[in-house]
Image (tube, rainbow, N blue to C red; front, side, top):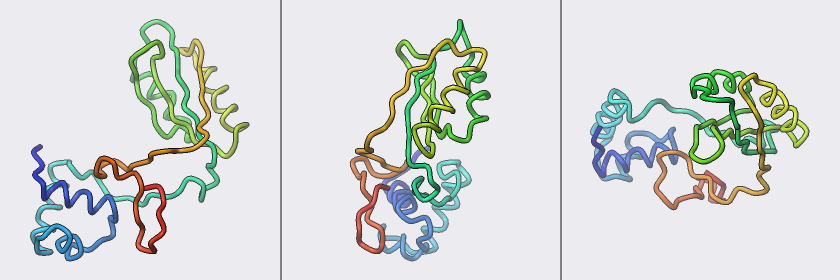
Length: 165
């Protein structure tokens, strides 16, 4: 799918504030509200926009600790098997196969370090896992939402105080 500058600007505006009206977005990108609606509809049909959601601060839900866990798996464990297993853990908020020695990298959010430890213990007990290597996040330096402009790690909410996007 080909996205032109206006499509990218509209997507950036929606990432910044998915509740913005077509008129507000149109004002930002230099189009009429109806032209923005037509483009958003097309972006949804083509799959460039897959949906709309609220970004909630994990801390507001009590998930104040995060970790990255490398999984080292037996033999030729299929990525689909890893995905199926780790999807059962709500604390796993991201998972990817990676290059290097490890087979996969998991992003975990939990209430505290003990909670992270219990999750890692349960994941390490999966039949295909040989070992894990974990790192606790001390502070998040850049946290850009998907689709935001490169380098715009901090969003300015409407109340004017900067927060991680």
